[in-house]
Length: 298
Image (tube, rainbow, N blue to C red; front, side):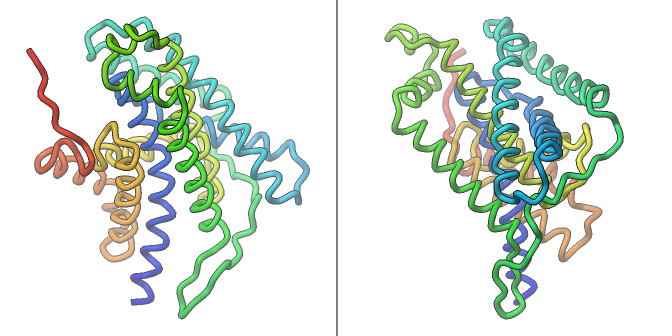
């Protein structure tokens, strides 16, 4: 039982990170009906930005270094998301969806290989900003400081996003655009501004996830966003693409499933699980746990 509970804690920590990345997928899909496959590579950029910022900051500052790296990664990734939307996706807004999908794959490849040119192809090791000390130990169950930090940052960011979407005028505009582009423009909503802001929010969350992953798994490199990006996409589909609560729940379920597979079966099947889950979801409930099936007029 102790091992089982420990696996749950480990799975929830990874699932929280998947949930942050999945939230970016689901927000962009909600307002633009686009799967931004470059999202996982924005997560990689966040980790790299945090790495260089952490090296510039004097060591030993602990939490201050972490917060500085986190803020820098979120700002840079938010600006990068806005730039990608403006240059790559906006010109294709009225084109067939397959055009935007192919472009998203192209942007993903561009970020990966540009990252190799800019940061170097060799792996880097993220500075130890937060000591991996035991925070709580109870009957053999251990929760370390990094896991507590991951949970805390994830909860704060999720509450912040929920507040923005549900309690602000801009969030109301986002929900209107998600419902209908045409109707939202008729009531005076600036469609371009709302879409850009959505990309900024989603990309900022990916940057935060890059920092959190780097704390627990300090080896980072330009290709690190491929598998986490795909798994977060599966998490978004599992929760219901377009649903903000669904993104978090899907991420947690993905993290738990992956941890149990590694702990009780074999780490060999860790990555295969994501694709198996995707197939099962599409066969059993294509709309996801929190998604809604909608009829499309043809």
